[in-house]
Length: 81
Image 1 (tube, one colour):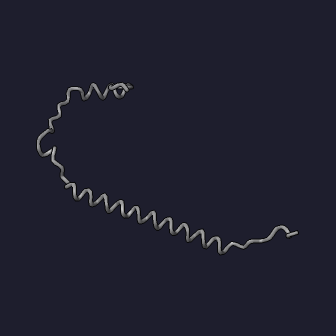
Image 2 (image 1 turned 90 degrees about the vertical axis):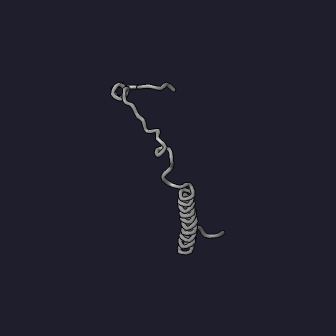
């Protein structure tokens, strides 16, 4: 995979920003604003909610299959010989 501009717009953008200087390597930019424990807790809550939703969806699907199967009226189309 080549690095660089592939089309005309990319070439223009490279020319425009080639001389820009960025200096954001101070200590405040490198420290996280959110603690790792809070992030893991939020991810755990999200995963538990999704797991619960999947379990409820599966249970609801099974209940709907049962309701449809019980309400079906089966009609014999051939006489038994």
